[in-house]
Structure formats: C-alpha cells, structure tokens
Image 1 (spheres, rainbow, N blue to C red):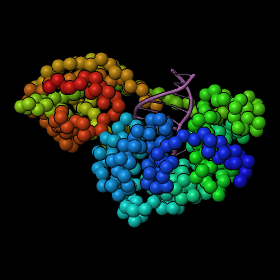
Image 2: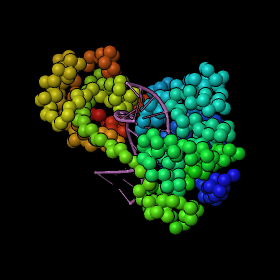
Image 3: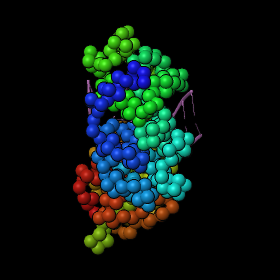
Image 4: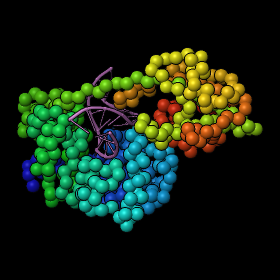
Length: 359
DNA sequence: AATCCGGGGGC
DNA sequence: GCCCCAGGATT
C-alpha cells in the first residue's frame, strides 16, 4: 500500500461517521445510498435513505413501486431524474440481472442513473472491484495535495485527477480507500477554510506549501442564471362536501419532470391578472367557464441552481365543473388525496402556508 | 464539450 | 449573494 492510502485509511478508521449504509454489504442498500448522495450532502440525504429502505427493503419491492410513489418519497430532494432512474434500474436488476446487482464495472455502468462515479462506488464498496471513485471530494483533496492546477471542470483536469485517483487506489481494499478519501474531503479537506494545521497531509500537500489551498480546486466556468415568472392558477370546484383541484403533471424537457403543479402561464416578466386572463392559453383550457378570482398570493421567490423563479398563485373558484382535458396533463383531484402527489418544493411550501385551499 | 437538472446549507 | 454537494443524461 502506498503512503497516501495508508495515511488516509488510518485517518478514516479514527474519524469516520457512523452511517447506516456503512453497516451493510447489501449492494442494493449501497447503490440506493450512492444515488441519493449524488450532488447531495449526507445531512440532507440521510432521512431520505432511511425512508426508502424502510418502504422498499430490497430491489424486488422497489421494482414493483409506481413512479408516482417513488417521486413522492423523493419529494424535496431535487434532481428528480435520479428517482425515475432509480425505478428503471430496479426493474432492470429484476428483469435482466436475475434480481442481483452485477459485480462488474461495465455492467454497473449500463444501469440507468449509474455513471462512472456510482459504478466505481458500488463496485468497490459492495464487491471490492478496483475502480477509483472521483467525486467532488476526491477532486478537492487530490487537486490540493498534489497541486493540480488545471481546471477540474474541463477534460484535462478531470483526466489528471482520474489518473491520480486510480494510481493511488489501494487495490487490496478499494472500498475502504474510496470511502476514506471521500470522508476526508467531507470532514477535513472542506471547501472553505480547512484546518490545514492539523492535517495529516500538511507536510506533503502542495497547495498548503504554495499557499494555494483557497484557490484549489480551480474551476473555470461560471453559472448563468435564468429568470422566469410562473403565473399559477389554482382552480377549484366544489361538489357536495368535496373540493376538487386541477393538478397538472410536468412532462417534457424542463424542471420537475414527473412532478405535479398547476395550470400556468409563464412570462419573462411580472404581468397583471388582466393580461393572463385574456391570454389564449388560459382561455383554451378554462373553456369560458364561469369563475371567481378569490385570492392572489404574494410573489414567491424560489431559487434553483441555474434559475431564479418568481411565482404568483391566482386562486380561481369555478362555479361549474372544470373541463378535464387529459391530453394536456390536467387531472381533477380531490383535495383530500393531494398528499399522494409529488410536488416541487415551491408548490409544496405554498400549499403548506395556505393550509387548506379555500374552495 | 457544453448544457441542463433541485434543493439546502455555509459563509 | 456565491459556492458547494458521495453526478448523470442528453445533445
């Protein structure tokens, strides 16, 4: 074993957190944890992991769930394609792999939602395969310790880190090595103001020697923000004691695919209600039915990584049954059963705030 | 190679 | 405000 691996695994044995997916050798549990933790902190993902293993203890039970159920349990975690791919892969394992995760890097890579990182993580941790993981932690630790100054969001920098990671990997115990490196990045070699004085690598860390810790890892790309205005219509119709709400499933090529929101008109700036009601898209689906504007919400700001959303909710109380056109994804749902539907955080938060929709 | 996809937390 | 997080799919 090389000195780097020796030091970092020794550090890991002393300092690692006790986490449920570390108490098992079950590939299903390890895969599930890795998918949940993609672009997600342990603190945020832990409760989701526990709910998922509790609801679906094995890959067979998960494979029999509906997409709506999986998205509902995933609600609030973001990057919802992970949840849809999770279900796809569970079905692949049951149907194409005889119910067992393959102990092979390339076959793991063929699974939906499993890229190089997750294939290496599941392979090394569950099966002892000799593939080095490269995630945000590994990028940060290796770029600092070995002084990699190439941009880690461009191909040459990434390739350099990948080569370094595979050279350093302890092939006798790759799962331990990989987890140690990531845990060290998560707990000690943190993004902002790490404690380099007490670091096990401070004598050999090139970034520390050159005073570059604050500048590594280097990224060259800037994120560009898009601003969108979402004018939502919460359309209700009261029938007897029941309040029905028109929900709309989100479909193609945009945020929140598979989740539900309301009929909306999107604009590039803030607009008046008169503009919205005279809009063709609005007239189309209300089909000239009679309604009362019963409430207008404040403007709600919701920040995504690449988008700033401003949403306003217009409550429309209809006096005759709402036309349900399943072609455009609108369904009339009893308010009592809204808990079964997965909503984006923006929608869920608003619904929590207003408590009940006043029909 | 570039772009898109969420939400929460640290500073 | 800006950056980051146990990244992956699509084009």
